[in-house]
Length: 328
Image (cartoon, rainbow, N blue to C red; front, side, top):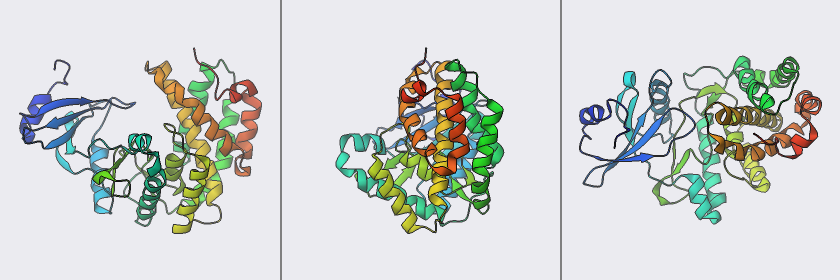
């Protein structure tokens, strides 16, 4: 295998996996690369290469340790070299929630029940030692829409008014997240592993290295307004009600859920456009109509009125009806 990163075999030898067979695993939208290692005995492990300076494996290692200490199922760390970007972990197998449900749609309710219950348990724990999901971070994320999507559609928009509208919408919610909980930020069907060959078994977590301390609705939105698979509206409502009934969510929770749904979806539209335009990954454009439809539902909530008015004034109806428009 000729395209392996420099230092690959040296790290495996130091970790005791030097003779293992190597199986590349398709990556995500980052610079990280993944490999499955397989010993002759059949034992397997996962190798992640998160090369500096583009990537830093330290947050992954820190969050994984915190999650395991607080009742969640992150992969065990077998060996690591943070300086060179190598992390060898337990192998959770191939049963990602998304593919499992594609093949077994009858398990959808059970799998989402378990994923929501895992969030309820996580949110009962004290917040982790992570940075705050604060207003500058929220605004930096929503600005990805005006920075990338709008130019891709040749739109000249009021970017300052967009930021101001978001600040007005998010300010009351941020006051309610002052105590905060740990937010994994990419909690969805492609980052949840179904362990033990059934949807109700403990679910393994991956891709959590960007964790922050924020609002309890964020990961629920990430799960139920999934950019990568269709979640039926009736299932979204049932799971939202399940979370509310099992947690100490207050009377503002549904409004905050809509706020964070719109915020996250605006960010994703910008990110997916950037992946296509800057990084040469056009496959993400096909997901934008799904994300846009969820954002439109969120914008219909009265809590989003200032942002909804901005969209009405700046994004033409034909683009919105087309699920974000076309990309050339």
